[in-house]
View 1 (cartoon, rainbow, N blue to C red):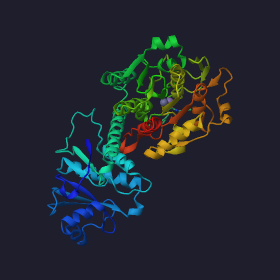
View 2 (view 1 turned 135 degrees about the vertical axis):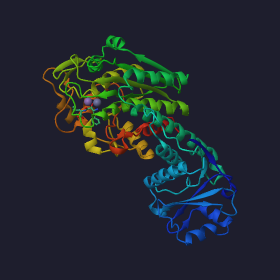
View 3 (view 1 turned 90 degrees about the vertical axis):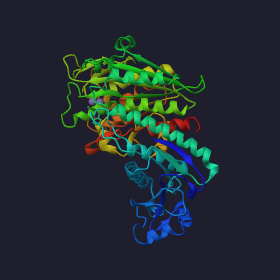
View 4 (view 1 turned 135 degrees about the horizontal axis):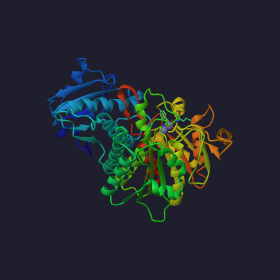
Length: 497
Ligand code: BES
Ligand code: MN
Ligand code: ZN
């Protein structure tokens, strides 16, 4: 959808549909009041008849409202003003956008952008509106043979602001929000593809495609031979059990000063995780096509930063592989040597994410990073701990952790920190190698992060476990695009925006 910012007299807007809010009980929003005045009390009279009292979720389409230029007015119930939360607003955006899409208006003016939402700034509301609209209209149709097209779908939405002085800053917020929404869409599209289409080579090709579209993005893809030379024994041990060759995708965007240290994002790109010899149970195993969501997040975040032309240096690294059982696959007890030189006893071949990540993280050292953030669907334990509400956050630097926590709160794409105390490290002791690839029964999310922490001694590092947040299961199964929103906000803030 195309978005714009509009300002002026709402009664004079020539548009197919003007969307105005009503609070309960029958309290007109400032815009609705203006429309009511121009129509000599038309809106109030209709509300008094009892068709709508402003409860949240209500909608009332009015045609030919006298005294104004818009063809239609859609009144939207927002509930009690003081109860209006961000979550409620997002729900309203979704239902209204869906019904507008089905109505015959191909463009509309959104008069709810200035609604006062608890804890929200007007700019956050603009952002929430765009994110909510895009989320509600998203469909994954690439693998359907026939796609039912919406007749006259909603194509243009103008967000209305009353104060002209805020026009410029609102426009900037809007274009940033649209860029982030585009990044999220790319992440979802990549993630929703099945494992037989979205292989490591496919992911690499998509990254190359992004590089061809943007001259300031340099994309390199390391093949297994090059990784062997670098000594990436942990990563390569995982792909040995698969017919699909592993790829290490490296994307460089140098939008900042040439001397500024880059932020490095490392995303787990496991295009299908069957568990290997430690085979997973078959129930819901299809969802392990989503085990590359960390990688898709890195690619989507880069896309968003490219379109925002952020003045920052940003490196994206995606180790991509499958994890399957095979005669040549890792076996429990196998010992491999990582690029860092540390040896690893593989006690469970299903703990493969940390094996591909540790070598990618070691590789990131060469960029002299300001910070490294890895993003991974790493542990089922994280779903037990935090559910689908928050991603797990662990870090070796509190300032970095706090930046990510703040970005999560700001965007609603939230993270929650778990401790990385040394006390947990002993769970990784091995009798035969420098470490085992699994801990004991407890704290599975933390011991996975402990494992990664052993490869991050040279820089500030944070780890995001997105096992519970990257996709939804059940009847609305699909990728969420999280945490692209969080990461872009973190990066925006890093370059002072
Ligand atoms: N990709 C999985 C983690 C996962 C499982 C994410 C289910 C989302 C839903 C990861 O590779 C894995 O299998 N982890 C194991 C680790 C264990 C063997 C220590 C897990 O969580 O069971
Ligand atoms: Mn696994
Ligand atoms: Zn996995």
